[in-house]
Length: 281
Ligand SMILES: Nc1ncnc2c1ncn2[C@@H]1O[C@H](COP(=O)(O)OP(=O)(O)OP(=O)(O)O)[C@@H](O)[C@H]1O
Ligand SMILES: [Mg+2]
Image 1 (tube, rainbow, N blue to C red):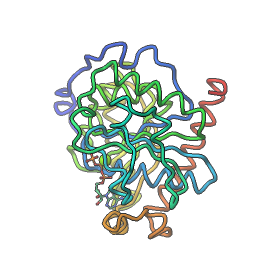
Image 2: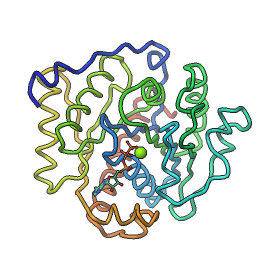
Image 3: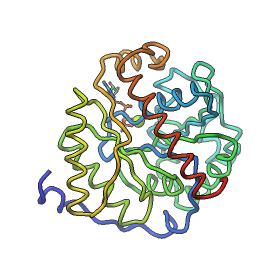
């Protein structure tokens, strides 16, 4: 990335209700990306599974409102979803369902639902508050966000103790990841971003991708986002998504599975640290 590319990135115009003054929740982790299609949902599902395999009680919230696809990747047909919450029919804890195969809970969204994709700020804040409330029932709560850094992403990630930002080595993905960090930093929301490099052809290439992003952040923003880990490009990922079966069931010994299990341990450590810092919440 050169200076011109990063300087063209916009600055934030978020309001305090989007993030300022929101209490951080020590076990809430958001999963984000600048550019779409880089592997957020696959990573969220597999990370939830890996954490559940460690014996943790995990909730995966489909926060890609209006374009939900956690249920699709897992081949589920949810009977209840976020739409019931938005319409005031059910509270958030009532739409939670247990996903037996992965032994974790899911709150499914609904794809193509205009009422979800264009929620007014007040309703979105209410949804976020309900989500924050049920965090105390879990060891870890993961939010699979939509791509980019729009109002919904900013609001949903505001309470997260950490945002795992996914990028691949594609220049557009890297530039958009930088924009995400810049906007998040300026807005005062999700300041704690760790980077996950996905689809790395080799560990050395993954390091190179991280260093490129890091250099831009250090030079232009004076911040140093740590590397949460990298996930290798692995044909088993496509295969598992195509079969709507979790990677940790279909190919538990694959390279990508191994990499995400490693990141699960990193996430475990982040939560322990956040708990210590914030008290018990
Ligand atoms: N480590 C990997 N190795 C190989 N392919 C991968 C890997 N990670 C992701 N993919 C591919 O990328 C595709 C997109 O993944 P996914 O739907 O999880 O992305 P996303 O970021 O959630 O997309 P969106 O922004 O549309 O929500 C997958 O269908 C899969 O084919
Ligand atoms: Mg997705």
